[in-house]
Length: 599
Image (cartoon, rainbow, N blue to C red):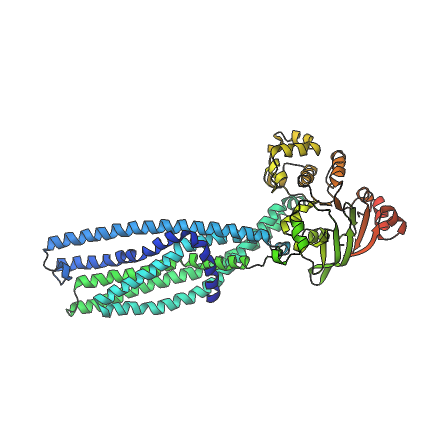
């Protein structure tokens, strides 16, 4: 565990590279801070020795009592002011570096999460990812800001005080330092147990966020099916599991704090007993005893502060572990190195448009090893050909689109675009040549223009002209502010048909070589669909088109129809040919005409 923690902590070092100066300054301040903390008890003890007429340090010998007291009080004031100034500077620098560190880590985590394949996101609840991007990163900021540098400062202070005590009175100094050994052993023992408990807290918090997000996203279903009480009871059980996990960390946190307080009091009692005996025997002055009493309290301040930081430190280590687990997730869908690409692939990547030939060669794919979705699927789409893919639910129609867009990789076989394996094309080039309109349209918060542009550098004039050509003017007029109309989350202030209309428009703006449509007009009313139909025909002209269709009218217009069943291509041909063949397509078409099924 310790070696793995160290490896993950080392991974954070590059994030601190831009703040080297602040970090060096912070570390350099540790020694003067420790000296300022160590000198204060010494000055107080010397003041008592001056008042009692006991032996004092050489630099005070021979001075009159009032002058010596004024000098000691002045030095004590300077030591306090210097310590406060250095401590304020150190805390400010540490907090600045900590916030910059976490901002960089959060940015990298977000980019990494976006680059991870859909396979990872399918098995990971969104709420758990949000926990790692928010509370786990915040915990890391706390452990760096008030934990890591604080622990270093405490260790330096402990070392300076220990050396000072031993140099003044070695017997009491060694006694107090020896006490640190069993205390450290107990702290490490509790640390290991707290670590396990804290990891469970993070896991339960992730589940809590996942449940909350799922219920809020599915609120309409919850209310329609009167699931409020049932879902509330389930959420209460999740909350109770989180509460029990937190109680476990509270126990260990309280135990370490109480243990240190007890040991600190016991150490003061030992110093009083042994020091009092030495004072009575004449071997030590009262001023020196007072110095050691103050030293014994200061000696346990680092450990006491460590106890106060205990939760933050362990929470930070757990956060580092969980953040490391996410960053260590491999990115499955990556660009092939340029040196490994064929000459044809390199030449094709430089071209803006391509003919649009699509070939599936013996493609097999499964989300789970025991549940194949596509088996040995092969077909070819000629440039400019319009093909519809139909089949019963679960036959693999949507999977074909995901594989073509490289959202997943097939386990066997290959997919070619214009004779080039899509794995040889840069992902940006591949997805620029594919225009995809899904049945479930997703719009981002922001205005209509931003949702139409997305990543494309399109000027306002081109955007407005394209909207007119696609017949979006009536929609934009209804929105009030036109292209500058602000959309709510997921386009909540638009109807399903209006959202899908915008989805078709943003694909048209990109001028793709291959158009993929998953029942693009499914949620449009007849009037909106009729308005768009002419523009869709213009959009399809000269492009290869793959249409996943559920309605007979859409299928009939295709040049060729591919019929899938259980991931296999069982029929292909025109609408008339397949109806005449009397196979699966004819059965589905007949059932749909009777209103009993969809294609």
